Length: 300
Ligand code: OGA
Ligand code: MN
Image 1 (cartoon, rainbow, N blue to C red):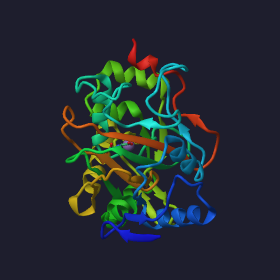
Image 2: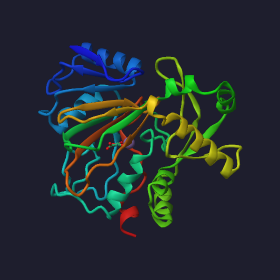
Image 3: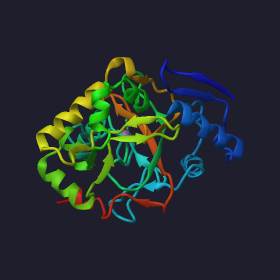
Image 4: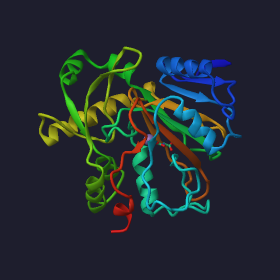
């Protein structure tokens, strides 16, 4: 096994594991330790693994957060349990840039922590590069422990007691979704309250915001939005950002409790980009964050 740093502040790559094999305890312990230290970890060379092997590896670290479904019997391009983060339709063809799917994906291009809008104890995302574009479409990250350390002391004091409301609808509006679509999302995904300062698994304090955050308890709407925007802008400074250039077969893992990530643009109409994501929680039942079929969003 070989570990190399990918950025001066955080993020590492691990070369050596074969995730087609059932992970043993030594590998599980190593990945937990590397994630605690580096927050983002890329396991290279997994182009040969199946969806089921991807899911098996994810389940070694916690119960899956299952994706929502449109219909119980819907045809899928990938195994149930994986989130489809691609630009492809069921037949593997590139979807229309103007489709709801594509517009929703646009919302991923603002820094966020996956699933911060639900009250399940989100842990990691594990995104697998099945087809990657030859240029563009990097995924970018920041380490919120480091960002917290760098905040001015007055800002640390200000946010220490604050709690923000996170909602999927809020980030989709920022990405360009209509108010009607957002209202329908809110019906099935009510949102969650999250402290703005958390303790990361390493024991270090970290900032906790992102594009799903939209309101701060005890502040006016304008004040809350301004504070959230200021913190995200601070966290987004180039010097803090690791930009992951995808290689086919990468399994990229990040800790949603102490890292933000975002997608970046690529030539959407020209290149296929097939990324598949497993999400795990710290504990609890294996279940979806969505209380009703996604049909409620797409068909009304
Ligand atoms: C995600 C995500 C960004 C990307 O899958 O959660 O935000 O680069 N993806 O596709
Ligand atoms: Mn995401």
